[in-house]
Image 1 (cartoon, rainbow, N blue to C red):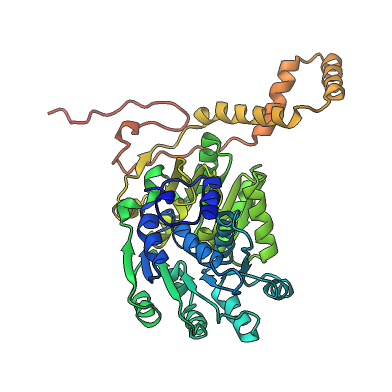
Image 2: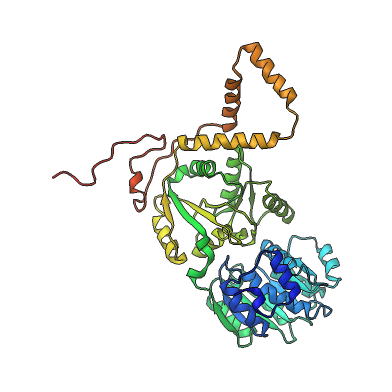
Length: 464
């Protein structure tokens, strides 16, 4: 089903067309018509299913039809990053809708700027529960004209302890309105919220096999725990992503691994919940604009990272909750593009891979770590390409004279000098990484080590 087959305003359709949206995802074609009929819904949908548009289009359409009434739409999100992402999507959808203003409000942002912005004709507010509650208490956010409330990632908000904040916000909405609740899981608390604040909601579910992990090639490499850092570096060199996300389970590991990657010459930055908002915005801007190759993060900020063209998601640690795995890998393979998700596991984590396969209804392929000899030509070519790209259009005449003069004085072959400089750019040789296999997919790799040599394979069967 296409967006133009349902009752969506023409100016919103223009915005969707500019975003490259044409065919609706399962959650969109199930949810949008129901919401546009004025009904409440509980949408069970994971990251990557297109749920932002599922509630965003009705939010914008409702605001467009009563644009002079003040704040008619409010969306609550668990994190600042997700609030910013949703706000950005709504702005794109409403690009051709005259008079619509969408405002993000969240903690860590200058309160004075928010107060000033709220005095203007704002139609839709997207915010985190705590900061929205602050503005309601200050009477700087008035909800008497509200027509639609959206609880996005409701399960995550509950996990983060926002239930009282959500209930506070809901208690201040007195007029007739719709409440749309979206969640990746359906714990009892979600059902309690639905029963308390929704009017005969319609339940809509996107099953596991419909989650868009099908566009993502999933694989894993098994290594010894103490060789994970080296394994990650080798895979980065081998896969050569232009833009990659690396997830760790703790802030401490994110910071330590970022320092190690920087020390090894990689373009890497960290982001997690303890960083000031200004610093997080700056790093996200660098990553989004292509000025940063590797972004390391914790699960706390995973859902708020909405960047197109992420080539690879690396799981340095497997997440503690299976839902987080889907949230992580959903950062790649977006907007109809292919993506890759690579997990680096130790010998004790094979069972977790099986559990993730069952949860995602997907196959996660075991792969063997590439040897240093296999990686060497790839990294050398990448370094040369980066140097050529950096110097294209620049005047190199003085530098050519320096090289010529040095070679003449010391009787050096210019090719030899070029090789020296390339070798220096490659950094230290990585440690040899021991081949480890779960023997599920990689029996054919048994006996091979990372120096590229092969040992004689033992016969599969003993001679009788």
